[in-house]
Image (cartoon, rainbow, N blue to C red; front, top):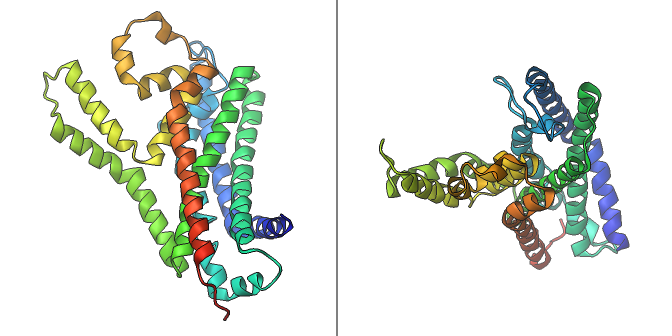
Length: 316
């Protein structure tokens, strides 16, 4: 345990003193505060029609020029995870530091565990700090404090963001363990992110339209079937699962309709749809997405751990 803490403190110190941490922190703060300014402007303009969960609109309201904060965070989290993980192991190998480190009374598993924990801690600090700053700015600007339900929703939002970032960090560390070159590991990680974030949705839409073509006179059943096929394929991507999860958590009504349009068609017109879901109902709604994201993060890190433990580390 002491060796893990040694590696953890050293990696944490390196992260906080690195230029990439300062650049990422600045980008996240600029994007977060910009989206907050847009959200506050739109909230003031629609003050008469805004009701219930007003505080959450700080994170979910966008504008014509800038998107909402949850859109920004969906884009930045994979980048943060990849940057903190792509050179975790292979850079130490190439510099010869890894063999010298393992010659000390430090277990091999302490190295990868300490690096992963330090990356997760840094990611948590970045996400939690910008969420707290946005909450403070919003509290001062709109003068409406969050209720207990909204505080819990924000807490679970941070929780989901951390595991989502943990998946991308674990994936980047996996390529860092497998590949000797840092350029190869970061390019592979970014290529997978671009495919899952951008191109998988296009492929899913094309397959759904090929299987269930939608004409001008398409029935509701055909539309639902087309959407279900497209959504089923899109959910291969953790980005889709993450977007669905945070949408339901922060937008209790709109998010539930977005994730489950079949139920919306069956109960259209029901008065219950006009009432926001409770925090418990929202968690039940996103439980499958959350479990899959956590499982993917664990699988990626476990694969990295197993491969690293079996690798031969030669002194240079």
